[in-house]
Image (tube, rainbow, N blue to C red):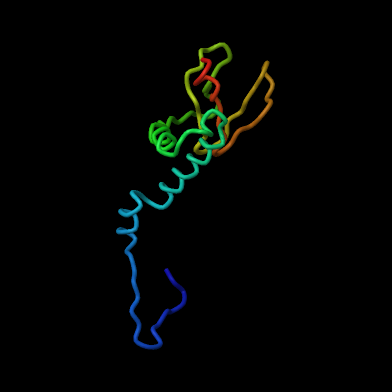
Length: 119
């Protein structure tokens, strides 16, 4: 809501778009669409995806499945066959090696890219 008033000083013709029409035009809410842009940016930053054309990156982004993990729940365990690539949408993920934390990953960080080509 605006705190200020906006008034025509002379006769004025002003174009506008409603919030509903805006969301229809961009195929979702602004946050959903920009989240998609962020995902494409992340995908583009991964070396194995860097040279892929935009339509393929878009298909990859559309194919992402959201999975919620509870605090302390394992996402990947050493020794398991890797077959997934992950992008963190929200929250933080701890990376441990030999029982010691070596890194913390957060929103838009990714892991598992090598599993897509080497398992």
